[in-house]
Length: 135
Image (cartoon, rainbow, N blue to C red; front, side):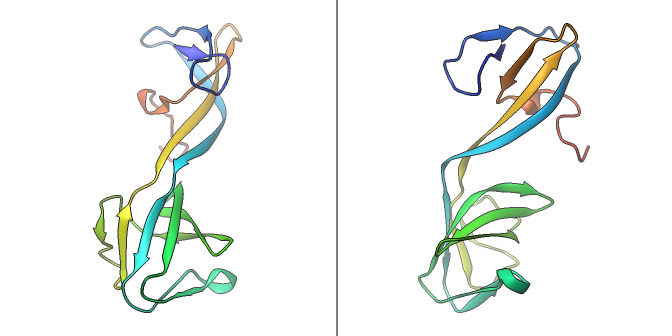
């Protein structure tokens, strides 16, 4: 079922059958609960203008995965991207001095159109072949 609006409880816009083609033209991520990373020793993350020095105990919020191993992070009012490569709590393997306390909870809403021109939204993009532009 593809819903009429990008919110839970929205009425059905149309239903898809197995093998039916659709075109996805837009999507966005909603973070319902940010993840958290804690510095366990002094560490610098980010590059250039996004370079950020962390001290033990500093908490960085993980907003969501953005692709190619990078996550969108938030620290002291600034957003920046960093390559974390983890979603399991514990020490971050290739980042000495950082540990993931909890991964974020997110939803990826994708707008799609079927062959008759009906438009709707889904959070189940992973159920479709070709859902990721990198595929």
